[in-house]
Length: 309
Image (cartoon, rainbow, N blue to C red; front, side):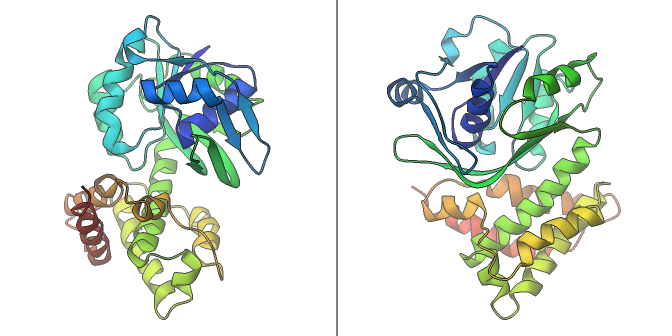
């Protein structure tokens, strides 16, 4: 099975690298600068679960695509989606499965319009990673997993075939029959964490240790969960209980990658992670939902974006 990973950043580089480590047929679609860096230093993963280096990993430039791929793993930032789609379009055939690991849900509509729902699967990945000064991938916590599943009309046994390819790689993976529910639940958690830690410029533990901090996070999550419920995907009790440990544990060091991006004066996914939730709250079928905390978070993030050069 030919696998094309779009980009070789922290997320795509990590999962693609682990698949290479397991002997899978993986190619990275990259820009020239990243291709040169990988040729010079190799694909380097620094991880609490084991380091890995692949000298001169297989890379491909968009202009050089000559073959179709069976699976395309897409993990770009949501604001880069249009450019990413244009870059890999020539690699998509009638039976290609595109597995996107983007935040939020808006990207599904964009991908469906371009490639059709039967090619676009649902996907969720769980990893905290960043890039070092020489382009090395630094995994920040031992957490690393992905889920995927059909959304349209399933194409034969491709879920099983993809599952087989992922088995044996040094990360957790599983197919899901309720992938949209799981995508919504990740969005609830991510938007809560990103919204709170970016607004407060603090870890979850520092926020909950401050007066009113735990109530703020709890109420922000309730607003976001109400949007998910309005879309028919109310977060399950076991999900809320499991993620509460990360949000409310005393001295929890957890933050969102959005806060790391803000501290680095980088672009953020304000519209895709927070703004789209507000839009869906306004368009709720049973009447607009009241989401005042989400609106405060969004105003803050857009004010930050206005300062970027």
